[in-house]
Length: 112
Image (cartoon, rainbow, N blue to C red; front, side, top):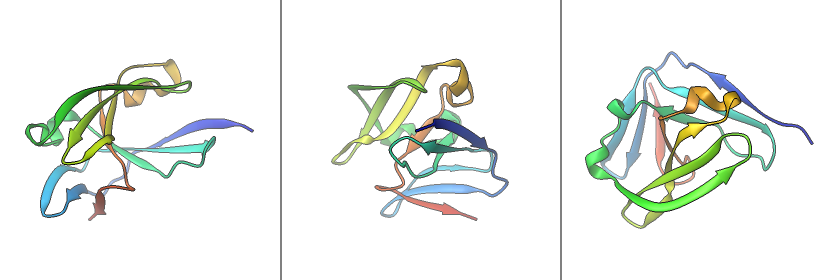
């Protein structure tokens, strides 16, 4: 089965919420759609300047993706693997490098 990445640049403003706490807000996100593979949902990636990083605590967990590279994670409340970034990516994933993503399965993602 083919597995590849598609990048889109949404025009609308995207917000990420955990309960009543706004964690990220931007009108210049990058939307990643993974085709094939394990069927991941689309995920918005934010520039760090658009993320309230003071709310997050970087943890030591790392995972490897053969398409994107090694990810690092941040924790908030009881969620340890729901916020991640690829600090160094493979060529096909370069647009993601240094951006921060939030799991749409854990956080409320709102587009306006």
